[in-house]
Image 1: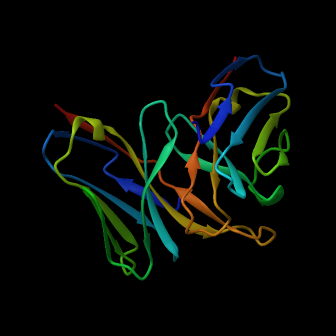
Image 2: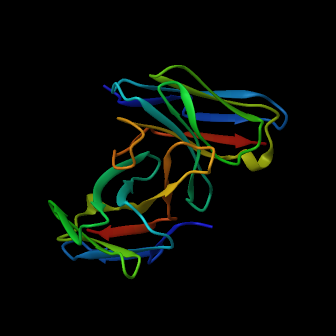
Length: 116
Length: 114
């Protein structure tokens, strides 16, 4: 089963408005990352928040993390048409016993449409 | 300069064929990954290599075989292709296998099996 699930699945807003996307996960994490994927392209890393952090900012992005609720939110302020993309949260999960590393588990993403 | 590149970008083939996807990164990273993204946009890790050594091997059919000739390249060979293999395959790399390193993704290879 997926570790992270984004909500809503799709979001349509007017340019200039704020967009908020949520992510819930199931098991304890060390870090949570947010990625953006433009249509037909690969994912691009946006921001990483550690489990001992509650909030982090990067430009127009604000990420919060509530480990007690196992949830995170991504806020994009003053949205632009160029922000139209899918946004994914990714959490770390230890690999199988024979694996020596952690792996990222991605949710199914929130598709954001910013109307000009 | 493309950081993580994949070839081909599109691959259309028939069931039963064998095909390969190549990936190269020029970032000097030690760790590389293969992901599969299905039609519902779920992105799932398949394999990970660190300095040419396999460190993550998810439960994928053994028809899928990764090969890392050097730490800048990670190729994916698929034998006896099936309809269910149709998906977009992404290669990614990171500085190391620590989980707080960000991953850099390639543009993806859209595989269609007919």
